[in-house]
Image 1 (cartoon, rainbow, N blue to C red):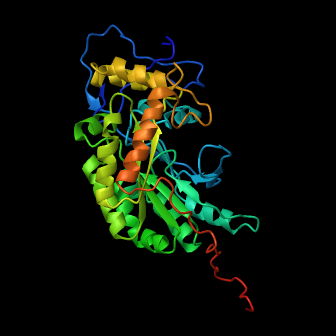
Image 2 (image 1 turned 60 degrees about the vertical axis):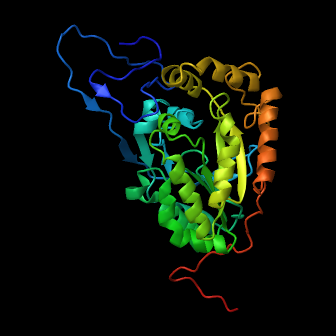
Image 3 (image 1 turned 90 degrees about the vertical axis):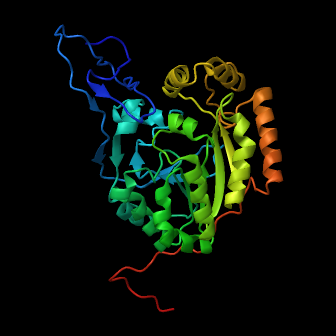
Amino acid sequence: METGKDRALLPGLRARARGTERNETGRYEPRAVVPADDGWDLPEEERLVATELRHERARSALSYNKSPDIPFDRSINPYRGCEHGCIYCFARPTHAYLNLSPGLDFETRLVARPGIGAVLERELRKPGYRVATVAIGTNTDPYQPCEAKERVMREVVEVLSAFNHPLAITTKGTLIERDLDLLAPMAEKGLLRVGVSVTTLDPALSRSMEPRAAAPARRLEVIRRLTAAGVTVRVMVAPVVPGLTDHEIEPILAAAAEAGAKGASWIMLRLPLEVAPLFRDWLEAKQPLRAAKVMARVREARGGKDYDAEWGKRMRGEGVFAGVIGQRFKLAVARYGLAQDLPALRSDLFARPPRAGDQLALF
């Protein structure tokens, strides 16, 4: 049955600990399938929506960008989709490229890319490759739950470690602690920094907004453990949700500094494409008394719209409210001894490790 673009859960399905139950059809699809009453008055067997994982053979590992408002030009995506299910995730619209929904599909129909480590090694060995920091976790989290079994991120880190390649990781996941045997030596050489995202210190709010991500206290413990291992950690107050979490900027920075973070950054809530209606629905369902205020603040910082994708504005917003957030952040960073700009990672140590059968150098 085709009735527009919105697709709800099929009868009998139930979503538990998910960011959304909506599953609107991707924007590139010409038709939508929606549940319809078949006229039979029979009870449906109830079952939970399960996470599905399929494998993709990676043809390339490094993705390049020329965006002028982000501090890296290359990244790696070990996974497509993210089981953390953060309702605000700006990466949700990328699932439409797979003919899947940016809604529930993004959280439950995941793609892993095993073997990407070998592909990455081939790319790094090309004579024309020029080294610069590679960012991982800028789209979906490389340390989401399925990494425990799939170990795709582990493959990537092993290769980058062997090549002495600079690496910046962004994550909410506790699985990063598993890889400290590789990450700590990289950090000691000046090849690594990690950003840990802390959106709120309220465990109930976090559970609602980020249903399968680590609890806030556990993320602070990740900062503590990484720091103890010699890893430079930046706390990311991201996203700042106007009217909902902006009052927590100072407490988050204080807690992160106490845990050992050396730097800090912030990003204003971004609601591109399908994310905006998903987020508005979540507000109405989970924060009905604040919904109008939150969206009013969002639009105040976005030129009257739900989102403005213009470079230079998309990360921080504009206007008086966004300016106040920026000033508060600047003052708090100074108060707690955090740096907004961390030292650049080293690129001079990059070297292609010898392989079996390679001709040895004379000197």
